[in-house]
Length: 182
Length: 121
Image (cartoon, rainbow over the protein chains, first blue to last red):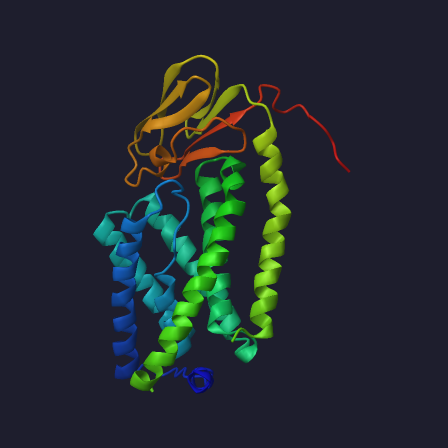
C-alpha cells in the first residue's frame, strides 16, 4: 500500500499530444460520460440540489496522468456528450453544467501546479467546492435573486464531503492504473 | 496519505462554510407571512394564508405555484429536470424553491421585508 502511494506521487504529466495521450483521454472521457449518466439516475430525491460529483473522478485522473490541457479536453468532451444524451446541452442547465465544469477544472489545475503540496484528494475537494460555488453564483444571476444562495452552505458542505470521498476513490484508482499507463 | 496542504485546504473550506451557516439559520427562524415569486416578468408577492394557484411565466414556459395551508410548492414546471417540483413543500423562511432553467425562484418572507429587524454589530 505504502509503495503504490509513493509510485503515484511521481509526476506523470507529458505535454506532447501522443497517441497514448489521446487514447487515455478518450478512455477517461468515455468513463466520465457513463458516470455522469449514472449520477443523473442516482439523484438524491429529497435534496435535489445535491450531486455526488463522481464524474469529476475522470478529470482528476486526467489531470494527474496527462496534465491540465488534456484534463480540460476530457471535461469539455464529457460535458458535451452528457448534454447531448440528456437533451440539456443548449439550455440553461447545460450552461450551468459548463460553468461548474470549467470552475472545477480551473481550481484543480491551479492546485496541480503547486507540485507535491497537495494530493489528488485536495484537488478533488477544491474542485467539488468550486463546482457548486460557480453553479450557485450563476444560478443566482439566472434566477434574478440572491435568495437561491440560502441553499449554498448546505450544498457546498455536501460537495466538500463528496469531494473527499471521490478524491480517495481517484487515489485508489491511480494506484492501480499506474502500471497500465506507465 | 493526505498532505499538509490537503488538510489545511479542507479545514479552511469547512471554516468558511461554517461562517456562512448562521445566516442561513437566522433566515429559517424568521416568521413568514408572504410568498415572493421572482421571475423574468418581475416580482409577485402573494399572502401565504390564502390558498391559491399562481401561474408564473418563466424563460421556458408557465410554471404553477401552489399555496396550501401556509406552505408553498411548485406543482408543475416546464423545465426538463424538475428540481423545483421535487423540492416539494416549503413552509419556513430561508428555504428557496428555484427553477433555474426557467429563471423562477419562490421563497417565503415577512411582509415587513426591507425594514430592518435588528442591527447586530
